Image (cartoon, rainbow, N blue to C red; front, side, top):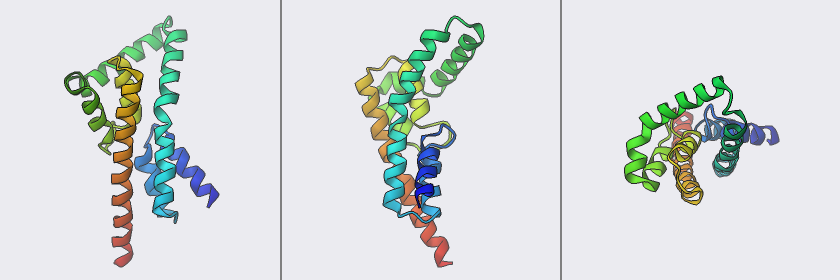
Length: 154
């Protein structure tokens, strides 16, 4: 049980799936859906403060290196292309909706990058990303729970 909690947490904080992978893993491996939700939500909520601190630190120390600068600009262009109009036009709500959609490429990591690129106030970005993560985790937990119930009925 403890190993399932740890794995759910690690999957939910990783950039390769976030809570969209962690919560289903927890539920499928036998955790109570509310526990899987709580662990996945907590891990995914930690993404913004940790990742924004890393972005600030890396850009401060590594910007002088050509490879890092080139990759950062490439990622920034990708982010602007994906959600530039939404964040510029709708600000808080655009970022929240982008983060809440439980699909690949959306989520807390890309939302944090967008907030950094578009220079949103940290409190506003934290609120938008947190609300988006909460809604996304709720959708994923509900879908996984009822999906598992349906499979067990067959």
